[in-house]
Length: 332
Image 1 (cartoon, rainbow, N blue to C red):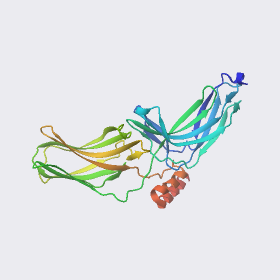
Image 2 (image 1 turned 90 degrees about the vertical axis):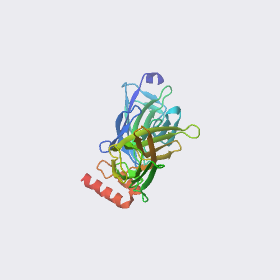
Image 3 (image 1 turned 30 degrees about the horizontal axis):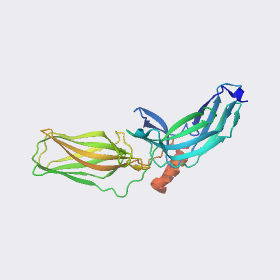
Image 4 (image 1 turned 180 degrees about the vertical axis):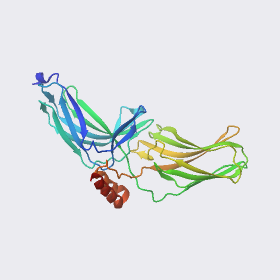
């Protein structure tokens, strides 16, 4: 029988059950391009079909078993040989044997835990994907399908304002205040800058949002700083007693929620960086960390019934009931 199966091969296709209704999200790939992937949240079921199509009709395909895996893994670019898996689920679709014709296999991973947000950075990638495998003696046939996971959060109870001072003895004294320290990804940073003492000739002043990606541990720690946004506060010399308002809209920038010590492999933090430049091109800095989070606004027709239920753990029963009622209205 192995003689007849020689030369036979197959194509694998993975199709989600709710592919027509599930929302897609843009996500950056390693090469910097953006692609759209199916969007999932923590606790949602991942189900679908694996279609195995034989390439050569009439020939049998001998295999050592067919399976599908749901995997969440972290890949550090400086250690590409090692993939750190934090989620690994397997479903056997077929026992070892032979396939005489093309077949379709159903699969379901129920209420899958997806603890971290999908992320592609300078030195690290966190991805979730389905992988279907036809095991063979010589070479396996595999097909992978990536998905994107977003983590939702509730509005923080404690969200104190940020107050800081920048001072150079007998030369400069500035106070600046931001309305809060934790912002959702479509929030607005509102603040004010007060000039209490100005004896240095300042010609330019801006606020930068800096993303700092930290990977590795101990002596092998790598930091990558990326300036996400520049907001010019003023161009020209301020005077004593002057105050300047700040309104910085975050929705226009590509940012992720703050990630702290993800699986003990990497962190992503965000900072507000106040930059002052005087007429002699000297630069003065003051930096303050802010926390970014993703608002749990998942009341959409494309969201599944399970997503509405999952929202309960993030936003309380009232929001969950609202999401469910909205979903029913959309269906009708």
